[in-house]
Amino acid sequence: QVQLLESGGGLVQAGGSLRLSCRASTSIFSINVLGWYRQVPGKPRDLVARITSGGNTNYTDSVKGRFTISRDGAKNTVYLQMNSLKPEDTAVYYCNAVAGTGVNYWGRGTQLTVSS
Picture 1: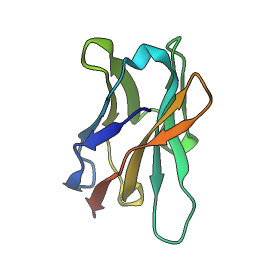
Picture 2: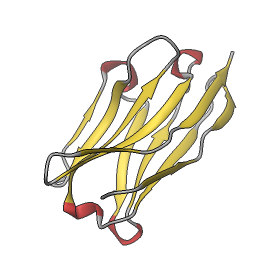
Picture 3: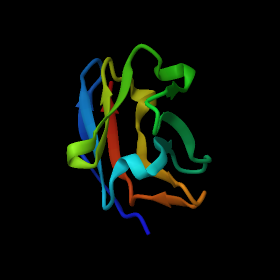
């Protein structure tokens, strides 16, 4: 069982920056993949960025060059640094962990609102 707790969401103006944090209840190096997803009402939850246990990262095209995923093993935390935010980035952001067993775990989500 992996518990994930997100923090850092809020209201920010377009062009601004924000960092999301997701703290895991277990060593993040025991987790195969850590990722951030986002969801707006009426739409599916989409991948934003992910990082593997080996440190490889992937980003959805719309955030490349603006968002950076990183991790801190000492704090069992994965971060999503978001720069040059746009109104279309407004969503609930969810932290995801894929354990070695293949089981997916989700946080409760944190709301990001980007005003124009």
